[in-house]
Image (tube, rainbow, N blue to C red; front, side):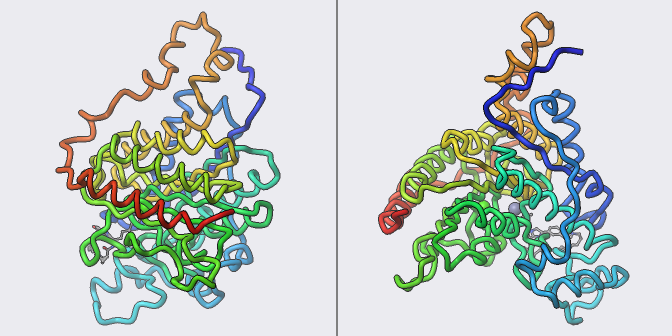
Length: 393
Ligand code: ZL4
Ligand code: CA
Ligand code: ZN
């Protein structure tokens, strides 16, 4: 037992609902809700809970979900019988309503509750940012970026990110949405396509017809009409297999740095999908925990409020490692260590980030072949910088 003096200055909050874990999409489905419990355990095992506010979150109400999703979709989501579960596998010809009940978005027991819990965590996080009770709010149970207003897509049923951003827009003029999941953040991009109050920027593997969802090309930058305020406010960074920490870090800093300069966001919503890590069951990149976490570190340097969402991540032990590391980035263990742990404690040195999170190169398995040339990455940066010439906040 040591004395914990919480540092003044800024507050980190962790929003978690333990009742998400018992839900499952099916034995062999890649999405494993227990990764959230695994993450929370790692976070508390390191004592990080002492350096932040911890909330067990409530479920989102129907009305809250209805601020983006349509009633006919929500009603079906609420009523759809789980018995009809693997419908399209057994009866590939049978109609699938709202894209519900296929193998990507199965109807499982407690689905509606599970969705309301995920959205509830993200909404609670957004509200803490709105009332200035938190500077960085963490909601690993959210980040479900593919859901559309009346359609499920890619393991996502309710778009908690859109709901949270709508909440932020009540209190802040401009929201920057950044998405480092290996998949394109299509649902969030689409929801805010026609507004200049939200800029979306997704980094993803791009290979139409081969890799889900197939959207998010370099030239997809918002409505093409100059009279539409959303023009130039969708930024896409299409990538190939095997990108490394070094390349990703360079891209991220030059693109997000420029966006920060031109768009001058008042708040950041960062989707931290962990399927961009090396060794992910569905992903294709070679990011290490350090390279993934460096994105959160860089965003933090802007000194504006931030929500960090979860998202994809299909090798659960690596998801927990990455999100625990990013939690430590949010609370800034290195800076606060003197205040959290007195220097005479024998295990103090283990609470330094480098000690807590050794490089995982060996753990994450053989790297994938890197198919991103320096030349192509420079072209991408060039294109994005040209888009941003049209943006002046
Ligand atoms: C699975 O093993 O590319 C679902 C999905 C279920 C269990 C047994 C059923 C076997 C991989 C994926 C049949 C599976 C057929 N089970 C899946 C076009 C597709 C049609 C569905 O990280 N088949 C669809 C969605 C992507 C497609 C990725 C990422 C979410 C996020 C945020 C969503 N859908 C082809 C695939 C399995 C499964 C194994 C799977 N599905 C891999 N990629 C997809 O961005 C949370
Ligand atoms: Ca992405
Ligand atoms: Zn993903």
